[in-house]
Length: 573
Image (tube, rainbow, N blue to C red; front, side, top):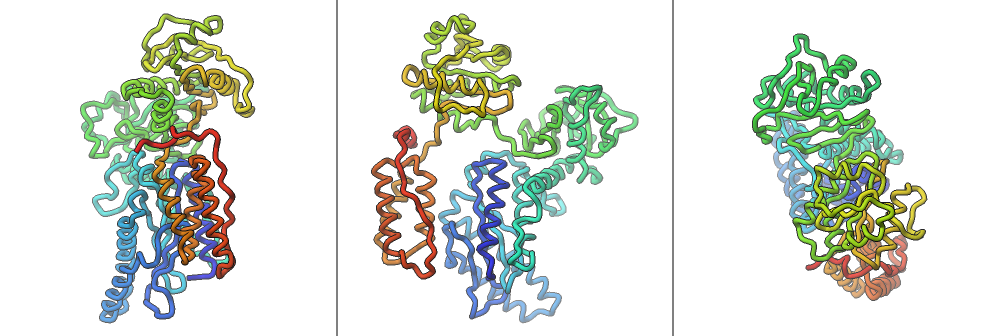
């Protein structure tokens, strides 16, 4: 389509990785470009792809040509004004059809695609396509309404706002001239994230039904969270809803409401708020204090909570779901401090046979322990009773008792670890963990983390053990840090595909590079035999096609088996 399109695609891919991986490294974005001729030309391909590592081909998009022919027949019969409107109609039809093609593709079962508005370049309508994992997207909480009664689109989540901001910035970047001076994105990562936060707060503001508040709430909450009153940090909640909302009971009504941009007065009023008494706002005016009452119909999406948690920190909630967290003016996706899927998987693999009820109880206790501001360690051990006896001189040994989230805050408030078994029975508190110096320690981490590493290595052959390390700086670690489980059948199918490719007379470079990229990413999971097979097949392909037409090829390293790999890393199929 144009000389520098490969550079543009690579730049957009790198920008997407910087943006989305900083929010959640599981998102793994992929970006590619699709160009469709506005007017068919026999000298140019109708569809052009800049898609180096994707599994789509030009032939997948042949149905777009029928739309173009249909459009051409209509245009011949229209005047200039009607022709211009038909271009917009054709663009809408193209986007709809591209989305349908991608969704119907075998690759679309595992991914969701988002498409930008097109940029007209050398006769082509060029679309940026962002691809994200369907499974990971499903782990986030979304609202259900994405349009206003008048048809205006709104974001259902902060993540959706991020996606829109990225695609808009990508389209703007493609408009830069000359194309050799392609600017990755005009705004930095932080600017894009802030813009997405502001856009999402527009959705929240709409609940107040006051049109004057659509663009002030984000900045107001940032400023209020930054202010102290008589040296104290601000804590409390603010309800965003219209003034006659059936689930809001007014307990104090201000005769003169406070404008949300009157920051100091509003910060002073926040001192009256707590978990039960909340400030009431329509997103422009603070008109009193109140409580939530009755059963809220969350399908209405008409009531939101702004929770000021500490200095420069606040959150947006709907129906008890945290939709966005903001720290020092920078929005972020809300993620559980420990990935629940990883927690359950790790415990199942270490404590084989553990049932769901025990897992749920341990998760609940762990989640409560993560709220301990000064940090702590939960040591979960199959030999908790014996360890409490062995470490009696360096702990408070207690009479075994079942613990729950109501008591965990108290027993983690002193230095030392809490020693429990898989039944959530506590055997000792304030435990000073022992162990010899370890090569796996981390000098950049504190004493708590390194003592947990030493203890785990001391116990590795004596008892099934998992330690949850909650550091004072907010970092949370699971020891051992087990890699995710994978399906062995997926590895086998990729080896079969590479075998077929090595036997083919046709050089499919894109397929070869895609397969090798998979093996490089999953090298930990390959057995010594599988590493040898992949290395041998790779050499066959590289030798057969060493004199390829353009002489350009990727250099792939030999795969080396990992000594820590065992069949426990495979999912049962």
